[in-house]
Image 1 (tube, rainbow, N blue to C red):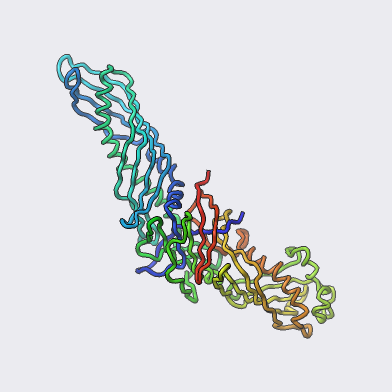
Image 2: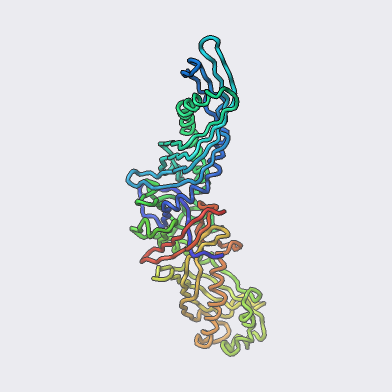
Length: 484
């Protein structure tokens, strides 16, 4: 299923000073919340079985002062209705809020009367902490190895309701232990949650961030540069955070992009209210085309069996008799293949309703049994390309549609070739074979895997995707939902 959308990830770092990114990824509060909620299960799993230090003390009761102890205090389960994220732009951080959290606690209790007759008793208890709200302050930093990293600072734990069930003991103990639990035990639980929860959240998120390479290999020729370009790692608006990413497709070995493409300047941080917003400078597309279509890198052979049925008869010289008479005369009733070779890197521009891409390719007539091409045509092909998300492999690609073309003759060993009679058929080849091949190049089974990676947002469904075109960048926005 194709989804007109995209998104590349919260990706990673770069050089010594802020530079203009080629690619921006913006998450609104809803988008950030959705992303955080994909990690609830691994966070909570680290808190199951949390142990709280014993609580001891002295309490006045109807039988006099007693020494009490609550031990083996264990968080048996912790459930959270949802995580909520909110950007606090003026403070330079965002909040992660665990809303409506509930915890089941077990413990052992005992007491002994201080004076004669030194009455004592022991038992167990169950407690339920309900409607807890836990608030964490989070910042995003850039590490020395060019990766994003989350840092958590302050934590606030508020417990809404408390239920306590004592197993054993006299009835008067209930009120005593409720008082103790609400004060001393709750303080101990708060302290343990404050110690354990930030590392659990931080490590879970950072384990995901650490999996992102600085350069993601696309194929044998190219990698995608995923380093962050801002020292601050992210920039904030009132309701969103944005990652600035280098965004160039570069040589797979040297990581060099030549020529260096200039990113759009002053791309905004937010376009609308949708959850995920991606800003692509034209340099992203231009560097992808340059790397993959430079002469000698891009070439392919069109064969009869792969052609649409209405085109297959044209892979024999007799079908060209009226258009290239010399071809049918010199090589009567001979089967052919056609080679398509890039002569220069494609160029791209942002048009009001598409990414315009112009390819310059030579189209070679190869007669079976003949080593050299018998006719060489040149096609300058313009396509209108729309970004879409390949949901099966989380990669953003361009879907090309024919827009315009110019056809010329480069060479012929079978006599004069006139452009006019071959133009209709050449246009048909462009529309039915060449442009579809440009699209096929981006399929997962093809050696040339163009397109931009989306390694961050996993376990998420995207919907209501929209695409917008500015003078030198493209904006793709969509809503997000955690997969069921």
